[in-house]
Image (cartoon, rainbow, N blue to C red; front, side):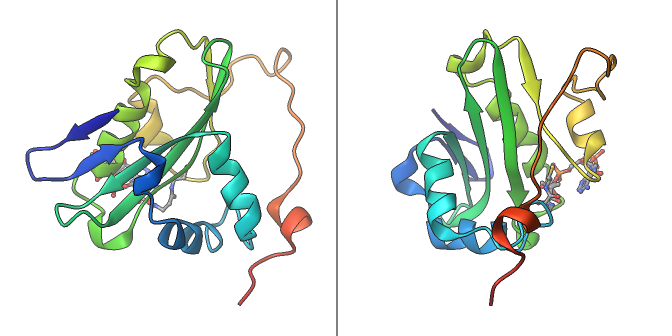
Length: 151
Ligand SMILES: CC(C)(COP(=O)(O)OP(=O)(O)OC[C@H]1O[C@@H](n2cnc3c(N)ncnc32)[C@H](O)[C@@H]1OP(=O)(O)O)[C@@H](O)C(=O)NCCC(=O)NCCS
């Protein structure tokens, strides 16, 4: 999948285009995956649809990825726009591109976790789980798994 905005920004799911150094550098410092080891990051790409966001100069400007069976569940994670590119609607556009991906149109349940970007996702129909009695999940923290940020 490849989309281009009028101002030259692009979203592409081509894994070969990803600037893995830039993405890993952001994610190992992100609040949800502090200390993310490089090999774990690479493995997460192997099993995901990666959505690279690129500036008009072709350089990495953001990222998101989806892990899914394409039917019952899709997990949207590692969503970010690099600081220099924020505030121009790119986060919204990136999430829209993800949700419009042709292979993900039959998904029954989308899942994501966020500390403070609820409003971004709410506009696409995401809601807080309405019936906690029906939903269970098992979680291990990034700190527990990776031991926190590394130099
Ligand atoms: C969240 C993020 C992707 C938004 O990117 P962006 O390109 O600046 O976003 P947009 O310009 O498309 O605007 C996002 C909209 O969501 C809103 N929003 C809600 N929560 C937000 C948050 N925590 N951060 C930024 N915007 C937020 C904005 O106010 C804006 O609404 P508006 O269009 O009514 O002004 C970006 O700030 C980012 O990478 N943050 C750090 C990583 C992160 O927190 N990722 C989300 C993890 S779930």
